[in-house]
Length: 369
Image 1 (cartoon, one colour):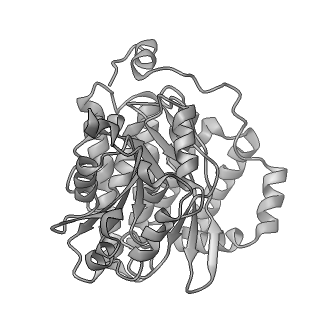
Image 2: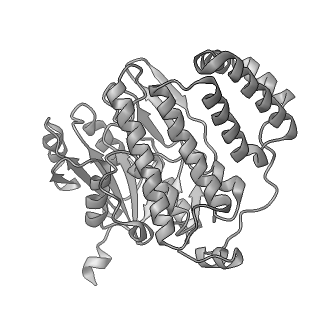
């Protein structure tokens, strides 16, 4: 009874690997939160660092609990951290990122407003302090019980490690995370969380994701080995998600679940294209598959616009089309003109249903998780 009463309300779970340049800043961003220290524990899981990461974390004494383990990657960090965490809520933070002021209070408040939610998530700022860059990422806020709605299934997913917080009693239903996921274990959890509980999104930018040369999920051009690892791990995460769904009574071949998985697989295919450029017809087919998944969400005008751009891609080829698209992305006024002339996504008109997993599955004639 006393141990339960003394349990913290929230655990800040920091995963770290060779982050000696950044770990102090990550810890300080947690310590500076406007939240009672007695209600929050800080747990650092050091994934076999070979630099001074564990020693730096150890300087904080009893305020920070640091657990060392052999190097095994993100899934192993999560599994160890979730087993050790004592908080009702577990908020994740990569050892090279930082939380912004108000993060913990906002997350706790959101869980209080949504007592059935298993996940609270929010967008990040992409931050490169060396270059003085800090940019807000695009974010689709999808809340509530997600399965059963095609639009929510294919727009949900703007989750990243440092922007996620989970309810411990809910995430345990998904453990252990497959240890082969050295990276993208966060994607595995985000994909499956919607099948065991509602989720809650907050639009505030409450985390800064640090860009640097050693990011494990870096898109750095020319780093082929890292790109290959990213693609392989992402594809493996999708495979593991598919296996979990099949094992828990969800048919991954039909309906909105098939579209949800196809959406993820198309992302993996884009990663593969960065390694080996596709031929014209392969890329054209990819764009048409992407359109087939998202067509129900698009306005009629935007469907026609996308059909035209796919034909343009067929004419220009992958590299020519991507170069043109990068130029377009850099022209904000042009994007605003297109959005005003040809709106893309049609407005959501139906409220998000407050079903439990079992209720939603029964309504659809399926099985609950």
